Length: 98
Image 1 (spheres, rainbow, N blue to C red):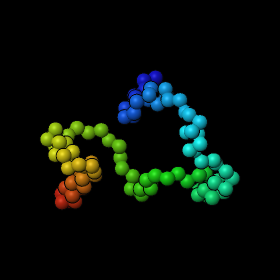
Image 2: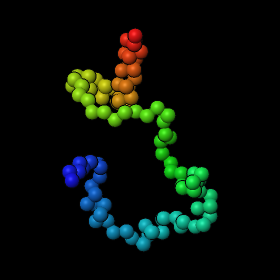
Image 3: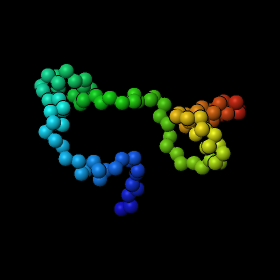
Image 4: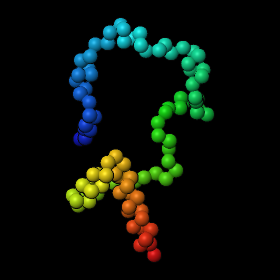
C-alpha cells in the first residue's frame, strides 16, 4: 500500500524523545465526573468537539495548476489568499454566467 506522508511542521522525533516530568502531570486537570456531566454532548451522547463549524456549502478538494504569477500575486496578499482566489473566481463566474 502506497501511503503519502504529510509534513506536519513539527519535529516528531523531538516530541517522542521528551520525557514528561511529574510537574507536567500536575498541570493537567483531573477529569472528574463533574467535568463529563457539564460537557456539551450531541443527541447521540458523543462529546461535541470545538473547531470550525460545518459549512452548509462544502468545498470540493481539487488539484489544479495555475500560472506562477497568479499564485505569486495571491500569496503576496497574505493569509486568506486561497479564499480571495476563490472569491475572484466566483466573481468571474457571476459575470460570465449565461
